Amino acid sequence: MRFGVVGVGAMGSLHAEYLAKRVPNAALVAIADVDIAAAHTVAGRLEVEHAYQTATELIAAASVDAIVVASPRRTHAGAIIEAAEVGKHTFSEKPLANTIEEIDSATAAVEKAGVALQVGFHRRFDASFRHVRDSIARGEIGEPRIVHSVSRDPVWGTSSRLPEDLLLETTIHDFDMVRWMSGSEIVEVHAVGIPATEPGRLEGVIVSLRLKNGSVATIDNHVASAYGYDQRVEVFGTQAVASVANIPSHQASVTGAEGDLHAPPLHFFAERYEDAYIAELVAFTKCVIDGTTPAIGASEARAAQVVAFAALESLRTGATVRV
Image (cartoon, rainbow, N blue to C red):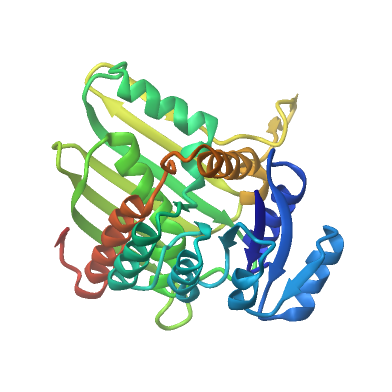
């Protein structure tokens, strides 16, 4: 299957690399980015023949069967709709769009065209998180009662974000994980921001959630972790607890007079989730070739984004918001 990648920032460059080298039955044939120099640079590095400045040009190319959308979120819905109208499949990064109305328009276009749409909630493809979710589904922890998710970025680039960027770009992964692991919908949200020094920006957020099945969840999200990338989850049930700890860069430790020295967590998302990113692209390629339903479709993305918007409202008002 011949892919074109739209947007070659941090995430798009990774997708392009994996499609070019590590996804069976996939070939990377085109790159597009508004920064045409960046498009040519990535295309040259990966030996890709075609580089374009717009998604429209890439989507129209006869050599492209499917696209990966990794451009800014305001462009996602438009690219999905354009691709659907010419019968091409789409793997899109989250969030799926800027508004729920745009999600619904993109979903309608995909359904009308009969093409595949998969959304990049890569944590569902992480082996450790999947093991916890499967254990819960098998009833091994009894009834879930508390879900706790920790997602902290290392000090990298900026140490603060606009609230909508924090919740729609980062915390949305945790909303999806809570729904997926608990097997229940989120019905109530209360969010408290951790203010940054810059006006109107946050360095973190704590979100409390109530689920339809009666369980509760908390999300601890921060963008300036001094000790590195922190990715943990714990699900406490009536019979047992299931959890995922941070994955260190190595397993060695050194013990001396000043105590124990251990490896820090893996540096950032590219290192921590490499296998998951590849696995989601493998799954998408396979579902298109086999004609099966994508693992994570528009309805899952929509549900997580509805919760993100409720959390934004809670930040603005200080109130608990029903979903």
